[in-house]
Image 1: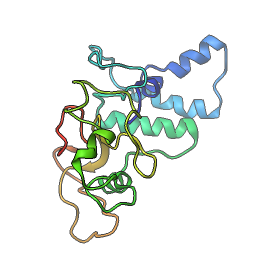
Image 2: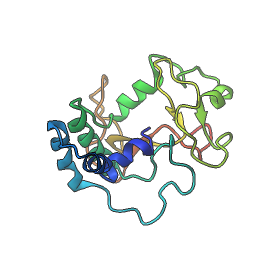
Image 3: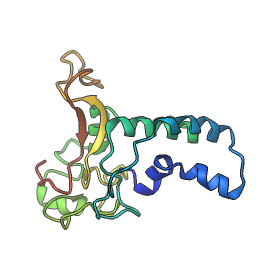
Length: 186
């Protein structure tokens, strides 16, 4: 999950505004990243947090295209490659080397320690990193907000057993991880 604090730097050109206020010239990475300012999301028509919190909270209500474009901008900004994971990559990261139903085992009664779901989220999105991480140190892989994947919703190709790429076409994109509004099984 990406926080509003990080997402709004791209969404509202906050990095460009800070440079202007400080009287700083853009460096090479800034210049490359500034090219991605042309494909920002449209201006929000309402408070996109819907009153659930901004500082330290996950950014919500973005399109999959906006998430992909943010990754491109972040790649230019940092010089490190970023992209959305495939559904298979997301699943691999979520399981964190385990072979159990959840990264912490098979007991759904322990889910409250690891996930913000309908039963324990208090009716709203929660700040990131409040629950226990996976064995690989990843937070919020179970619950809080759905996370975009690169794939289209559909079946994995039958021929790809190792590292499947997922469907290349479909009617909707894949989101994984569960939600503060969903029950533990979802």
